[in-house]
Length: 175
Image (cartoon, rainbow, N blue to C red; front, top):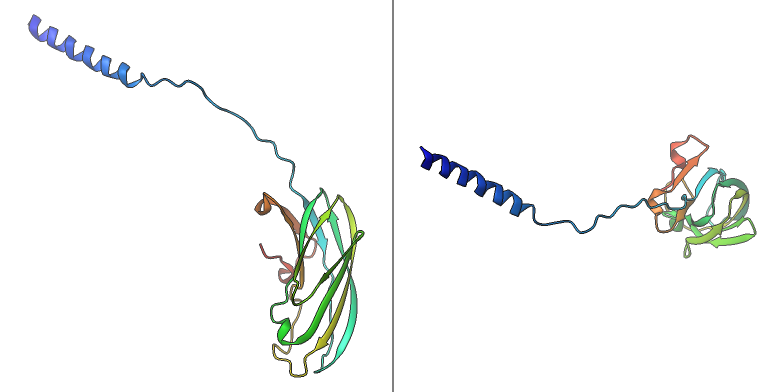
C-alpha cells in the first residue's frame, strides 16, 4: 500500500510541477492609460430654403438666401455642393457662400471647400447664380432637395455630432 501512496504523491507532485512551470511566463510590465482628446466640433444649423420658382430653357437668374450656423468648438468644416443632376438642367450653377469673414465659391466643377471656423454664431449668406440649359433634362419638380451641406473634417471625422434644428428628413446630411 505504501507503493500506491508513493505513486499517488509522485503523480500529484508532477501535476503541481507542471502547473508551476506553466505559470513561469512572468509579466514584466502592464500598461494602462486614459486618452483625453479635445472635444470634437459640434454645431447646429438652421437651413435656408432656396426656391428658383418656374424655370424655362435658357433662363438666367440670381437668388439669395440666409442660413444660420452655430459652432460650439473650433475646427475644420467641409462645405459641399450636392450637384448631382444639376448639370442636366443648368449650364451654369454657381453658389457663393459668405460665412464669417470668408467667401466660398462652389459650382458644378468645384463642389467642396474646407473652411476653419471658431466658436460662434454665423449668419451664412448664400447667393445662387444659374442659367438653365437650352434643352434641360431631369425631373420636372424638385422639392427640398439637400443642396449644400457642412460637416466637420479631421482625424475623428465619424465621431462628430451635428444637429439640425429643422426636423425634416429631406434636410439630412450625408455621412
